[in-house]
Image (cartoon, rainbow over all chains, first blue to last red; front, side, top):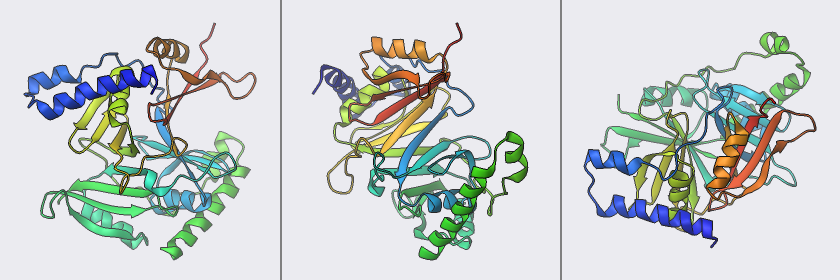
Amino acid sequence: MSDFNKLCENFGKKRIETVIHNRLNPDDRIDWWKSENEYPFSLNPARPFWIEYVVKSFEAELGFFVDILGLIPNAISENYAVLSNPKNDFFFGFWKDSEIKRQTQPESITIGFLIDEIEKKYRELEERGVQFFHKPKGYPKNNDPLLVCKLETPNKIPIELWGMKE
Amino acid sequence: MSELIEKCREFGKKRIEIAASLKTPEDWQTKWPANENEFIYKLGPCWTHMIEYYVDDFEAEVGFMTDILGFDTFVADGNMGYCSVTNPDKFFYFSFYKADGKEKIATPGNAIKLCLMVENIEEVTEALEKREIEFERKPAPDMEGSPMLRGIFKTPNGIRLELWGMMSQG
């Protein structure tokens, strides 16, 4: 392990130990959040952040997000797309796989959204032909008010929808 | 699902063909077809969206995101081996779990990229280098003469973080 990774590990270890071993009261927590280094980024509003993954069936992934889920393309070409919602709250992109960009294994990532009216949206998406692994169910216990349901993109990237019981 | 995938493929194919024919911003305004289905989700309130990945060295990733990069901690759960970080304005949420080798396999370094478009990219790069971050690629244009710079560094678990930004004037 490099010196730098060791440094990161020590920082992380200290934080995890603090969380696990100390019951922090809210005032202490404010101090705990303080980073050893300040946040240095001023983000560009045109596209402040995004993640990228790689898919085999690029066309199906694009059609799924744009014409089934209703997202808006922020950038698009024959092998790359970045999508967002109409209010630009989030951005994510995907590449068509190639010799240098290998397909992202579906178990590698999960994309999550916290939404209002989850049960209604679940029904609307089912009407669009989206198949879910299960209906919205309580988390962590079945009768809890926080609900989650899961679906996957045509390239099997998991998507979780979270929301409060109506 | 296979019928839906076929439908998605047809939608996507059509859009890629149309995109290739659009040359100007006006073309995009007038010729880009409306979505077949509208966006129906109201996001929030306590978080909006997040991407999750899986790491072997959980502690190093926590320290890197919080104490080196300076991201705010949104959730830190040592028992679950879960951490979620965000920026002070809460535009984005990056989350990671400790891999367990069974249900949660460590995400390979080349599976995803986390990307930020920042202002003052040269200053940011200098600040990050002072924090001992080694850039795999220092911010540089992809094409000769382009003012858009792109730099890459990795988290302790090899996940690539890409910085984009405009070259400063003068």
